[in-house]
Image: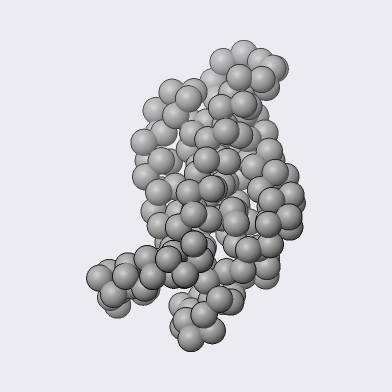
Length: 174
C-alpha cells in the first residue's frame, strides 16, 4: 500500500507542482501546527454566550482526536512518513518531529473542529470545512503524509466530533 500511495504522491506532484503552490501550501499547513488555529477558534467561541457550548464541544473533540490519534495510534502503528520511505523526496518544510505518519494530526484537528461547527450549525462552518480540506490537502502536497493518513485523520475527526456533539453535556445554555 505504501508504494502505491507514494505513486499517488508523485502523480500529484507531477500534475500540480508549481511555484505558487510551493509557496502557498507551507503557509496553509502552518495554520494547523499544534492545532493552534483551531484551539484559538474554540477559545473565541468560549468567550460568547451564544457559542460557548460549541467552543466546549470543539475543544473536547480536538482533545479526543489528539489522545486517540496522536498519543495512541501514531505510536502503535508507527508508520513512516513519505520522506522517510523515499529519502529522495525534497521537502518544502522542515520534517516533522513526530515519527508516526498515521493519522495526520493536522487533519484530525481541522476536521474535528470543522465537523463540530457543521453539526452545531454554526454560521461559519462552511469556511471552516473549506479550510480543513485545504490544510488536509497541504499535508499530501508537501509529502508529509500519505493519502490514507489524511483519510484516517478525517475519519477520526468526524468520529470525535460526532461523539462529543452527542455526549458532552450541555454545560452552557446556547
